[in-house]
Length: 180
Image (cartoon, rainbow, N blue to C red):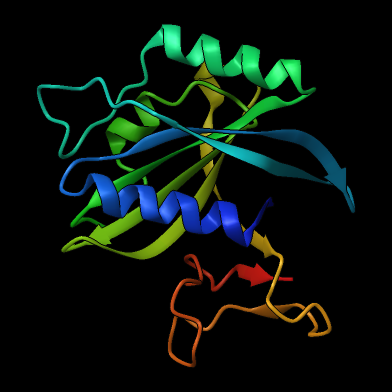
């Protein structure tokens, strides 16, 4: 599971809208936790990164190694790890592509993809890179738990794909975006 605040979730989606028609990208800093026997990547900050792909920034992204090291050091200064990455898919679904898979190497990390259609963020999904080494890696669909609802007295709930007053929270492939 991937857990983040509503503020971080919204910031990731807004980043995709602001860079449209190019892909945005960034790094998720937080902590690796285990709850109920399963992995939880708890995000505490989303750091925007520059997309250094100049040949095809509309459908590819790359974070400069120097920037990635700087972000990693920044996180470590606050006791945080890199727990994931995010990017947008302009006018394409929020599903990983063969290129996304080939370029994913951080086992245990979450890879968040937001579909941005005609400049508006439509759906955000997460995929955990599972495996023990490069040869057996695979992407697994991952639930995104969004915390920090407007009325803290309300019980946790599933997102409703924006059909009943929740325009920013869409479920992933199995309806698995929860807000608590």
